[in-house]
Length: 610
Image (cartoon, rainbow, N blue to C red; front, top):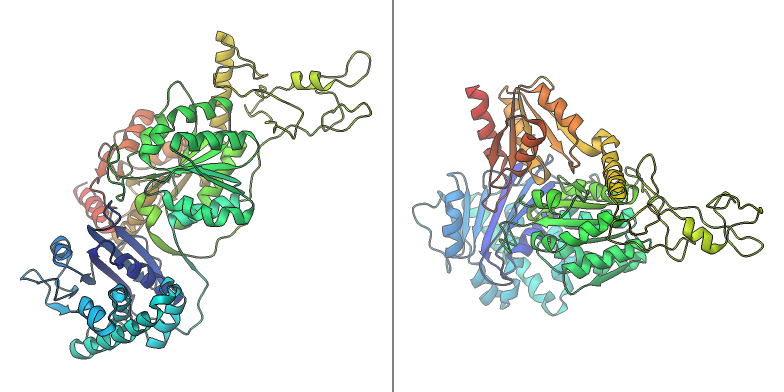
């Protein structure tokens, strides 16, 4: 059977229900066992403005949004003008004749679909316009109407009782028109699956949902946040799910209050996190330093958006790397990671919590709008793949005859007293070294109300007892302690630090991070089919940099290209500064993700000329 790969793009006015059509098509295809990858390009306004949903469906894993458009459906003239330049002569154009007038730029296979008229006149329910569009697509794809009705009853549309009858009529009208179009034009694109056949179980999730699920799997107990695109739906997920797991969620007045609450909850012994985007992360800089100084475990998700200031809230860009790594006053070490796809969002989130707890540090998780909001089909998650890690605690006190506690070994925390009696609670508390100097730099963290070790966690420099100490000697010791602790991350298993793909003997090496992994891997597959060898390195750990693995990669290849969704080449500059190695840069900064074709063309130009 020939390989099946279909890309559908829908474009119309934001608020008309167009995005729901894309979402429901994705869910329907996923339930039939196909691989799905969606992409949305939205305006910042809640309602109004040009909106686009793209859906790529295949019988093999999908790694990128797709380069070519097989079917373009436009709902008005504005979106026709925006997207017509992206079609090829083989694209099928579907347009609403009451809203759109095609011209000489239209492909040869262009067909009118009066969505608005069908909804208003036949069904008399304009809100069912998107159900009509969904049904027409399923008819074109050869999905029988009974299957569509079954999928409809599982969809969000069926939840609105007041429009249930109209929506069922919309399915009938959509199928009637779609089947007529197939008969008259022959433009059927039948799916390569039996909708009734058994297939391996799979889910279809967005990156934000996968982050939420990973947080719950890691043992999240407290979330505080302030709504900000494209991170808001993480908080919406927790509002529904976290209380079911015994956790607490708080919407605060701003991002500063959110991180302050997270620091407090973690100090009290609860696994805690927040999520934001670039403007919110800027506000959190001071408190990230506080968490580093106090050695408080926590996770911050930064779903990056385009541009400085409020920028482009609904567009992707990898512009926050330098802020995440270097945004601080003083030297406050932290851990920065970047997931690469939707499934990796789940596992990397668990790893972020593990590292936060193990190394008692803030961990920043860098996603972006594309990865946050796109949907992918993923297999069921393996909860045993990433075991949970808990923070290092001091021993619990044991009861004694005189009511005073001892450590878990029955010995006094400050050693046996001269008369053989156990230390008093006051002596025990005084002896507790919250910031004890250890070989790893990690010190036992007492939980208020659990351990008899009260201490004050302060943002001021302190000694091992958490007492304020500004002396030069103590600042040197504590600075070494904090960095020694974080640098221990580099001893973690290599698969936690980097991913590597491609032949070891390739002369051209490519480094990407985050959501650009998928388009790069697809480009490498195409180049391999042409006889070219390319090797890829994807750092999952961005701070501290996994120098050992990166240096080995740089030593193997003659030329290195760093591909990033930003203007200045932020990772490229970090690598050049760290390794004194010149690299080529391929950057995109238009608020759109990379396509495999763009990366393939650029890399091929280097391979051919070298």
